[in-house]
Image (cartoon, rainbow, N blue to C red; front, side, top):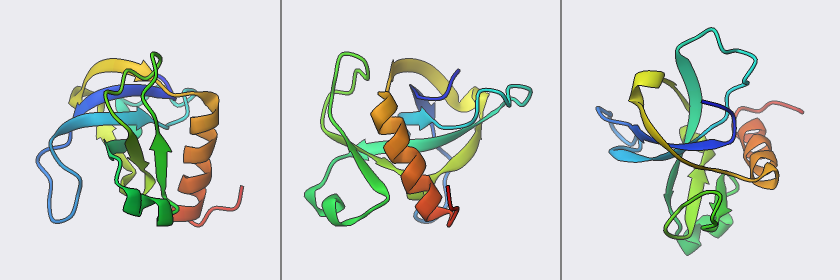
Length: 114
């Protein structure tokens, strides 16, 4: 399990407005922190044109590398740490360009100056 990989994960049980069900996510945690059985992930959801105005939603189009079936959005506002037991199966990877966009969006969401 490495940064930039897309995995299916089981987000349930959830509370309130947390994103739910089995869905793809991108691993964003640092690979050098491999001693923990946790990964920091950002969930992927279906793309909606209203997301164009939302800076923490990163659009990602289907490719052979990511194996997504439709235009999607990485929701960096829903960043979370999850047990590796929630990660079901790797489905693909994202490009270095998408990882940079995700990193920048996370910096904005978390108010971190990079």
